[in-house]
Amino acid sequence: MSLADLPAVMEIENQAFSNPWSVDMVKKELSQDWSTVLLAELWTPRGWLIRAFAIFWLVHDEIHVLNVATHQELRRQGIGRQVMDAVIAFGRDHKCRIATLEVRRGNGAALGLYQSLGFRTVGLRPNYYQDDREDAVVMIMDL
Ligand SMILES: CC(C)(COP(=O)(O)OP(=O)(O)OC[C@H]1O[C@@H](n2cnc3c(N)ncnc32)[C@H](O)[C@@H]1OP(=O)(O)O)[C@@H](O)C(=O)NCCC(=O)NCCS
Image 1 (tube, rainbow, N blue to C red):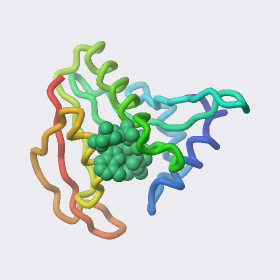
Image 2 (cartoon, protein in one colour; image 1 turned 180 degrees about the vertical axis):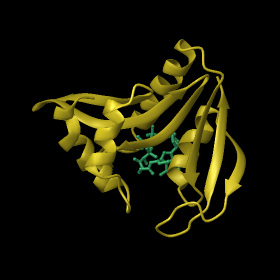
Image 3 (cartoon, protein in one colour; image 1 turned 135 degrees about the vertical axis):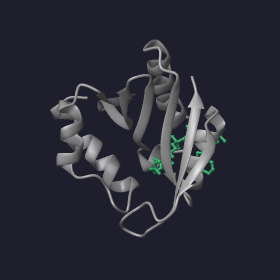
Image 4 (cartoon, rainbow, N blue to C red; image 1 turned 45 degrees about the horizontal axis):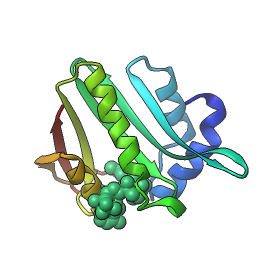
């Protein structure tokens, strides 16, 4: 991702979450060596359009996934899975041992995606999300 991609990424982010990341939060990820923002682009009559993204950190031998979203009109078409497959491949290429993430307890779509990829639940962080105090499910996948 480059700065020029910010508007498209923010459009997806703002559609996807009730408490979305700010522009500055996404921008910050672009400046950190350990962070990657991976984009999924689809060819359309208007050219290549960004349709999903994942933000993750490479920390020692671990991939930590912070954010994943697919454009709301293109969900359930396998794009989220392809993005996460690329995150997992990145981790394996970098000799990581595990991938970790937190997900809202009530986010059935994301839980379904991660479970279908092989993530397993290893814990619960009660009242984790500041806006509504929803619990976070902690998931891990062995790479
Ligand atoms: C979670 C999200 C990224 C999934 O993206 P997507 O492109 O729709 O996912 P895919 O089409 O690749 O689905 C892959 C698998 O995930 C699961 N899944 C996806 N959407 C689902 C839903 N609404 N309900 C249950 N399972 C779902 C299924 O196992 C699916 O496989 P299947 O279609 O063969 O059954 C998307 O719903 C999204 O952007 N949600 C809003 C943002 C968000 O909550 N991000 C996660 C933060 S932790």
